[in-house]
Image: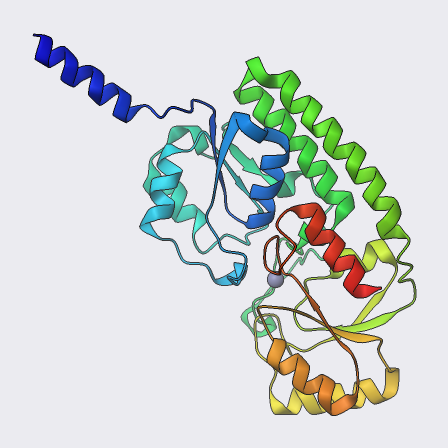
Length: 293
Ligand SMILES: [Zn+2]
């Protein structure tokens, strides 16, 4: 009997983690970063996608399904950016807590004022995002709304720490207001850029600059030689202020176009952690804005 009890208690110790806080699964690095700001030591965060991975083409892995099985809440970008793996995680993890409609299913885009929605999409348009532009991790005015949404959702799941989450959000919001003043000082109004992929539409709208052309002839399609020739003509005509590209996708092509035209190539992180010194969302945005200055 004693031996059974010992075995039983040992099993319990091994099975129950020392940490009893909320288990948060975030798809993308910026989401994990925001969750940590709000949840701090009351949550553990597992982030599924690496900062260097192209978020459009992520495949589900068994480790993701395992993470989904243990999650109290799954937080994701939405607008179908995770269409290639999230439905599979939800289905295969068989975790009722994270199913759509449940408190543990957090679609960040529900808090976003979405731009570039398409009424009608067909194959010939390339990998267009039909529900609207999903790259709002570059959009401070939307990120602050997502952060508030996170504090509400965490509070709902863990009522005993609701004040804690609320206070962390207030601290986040105060820091955000300070940062916004600095970022707004960049004065990018009227500038014109070429971008590799349509990642910067929110940033352009919020800062009054324009993306006049894309290096991708269609979303998700790498530039052909003919498209590059067209871009060179466009560059001669409109003399853009720079070519915007991320450190992980299209950099070589952008550098080659920059070398041929003399237009400055501006390398931005695509997500939190994608470049040195961008390990949390504020640092990420600082890097984006200082690179554009
Ligand atoms: Zn995209």
